[in-house]
Image 1 (tube, rainbow, N blue to C red):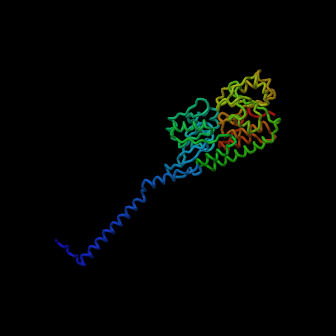
Image 2: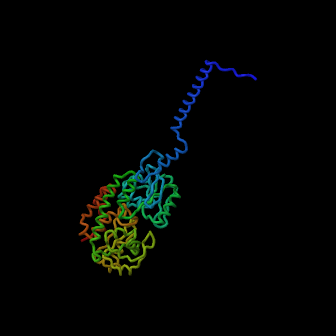
Image 3: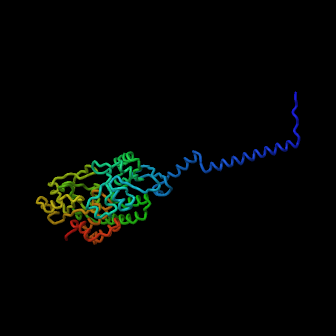
Length: 398
């Protein structure tokens, strides 16, 4: 058997030195690799970062870099992932579009309905000729899905009802567009809250607060004034819709919220047939109700003569409102002050109608108040001619 030769002390020292150098090189290499890994985390840390960046409430929307998203819960309780910075918006209905026009018009990618000639008179030129892209509202309306997608809004706002049917519609629209649809309460008494919510969503809180504070003041005043009225003091009002004035909406309808808030007695004893409303009635029913005031629906296309039918026709002359000259056409320009579509403009409608029905409670120079509203909400200075066009049939002659 051969025996291994014993190393000398010199050789042993050299071997130890070489081993130490190898170990040192290995440590340096490991540290270098670890340093590279810190700038490119593995799958687990990437997932954690994603979860962190998408967990937020609506109050944090508007922060973050390009492509960043946040998770929010809308007012219908639906959880959505939306862009952290919103630049472009579309709305499912004119209620939302009208609010956006007042709050942040440059974010709108288009109207639902192309403005009429009458409406254009109160809209700055750069917004007048935007083609209507449709929407999901009223009877048998649908949005132009291809065009809406092409214009790539960051979010779609659905301002209105929050019930189960509305949720189902919002989910369906979201499926068609592949764009998050945010549901927001559109009730008149919550106008201020709605403005603040949308303002925070879009990063325009200061402008939203300015408008919301005005709305809050109007609602508070109307609720206080209505509470002062006895049943006997509540003015009996008929809301005349349709081509003959023989369609209407009852108390509690979305379409008569202004009447309800002001404290008028809506004479229409009819059932709410659908969200669209406009229940048909006979003239005999109107005669039996015998309203003290008739409000005639606005006429955006300037094609109707309902106001003339009621004020000059032989059939209506037996109704108290006609006898005493208390028939008024609801103003419109650019949006309706009362209904169709319901919008933030109804806030002005509350002060107009309150002053008309209960001047002792709503002691305004209503023309000055209208000019103030248009300056604040539409950022336009109404001329006297425009004021006359708006209110020529909407003022008491007394």
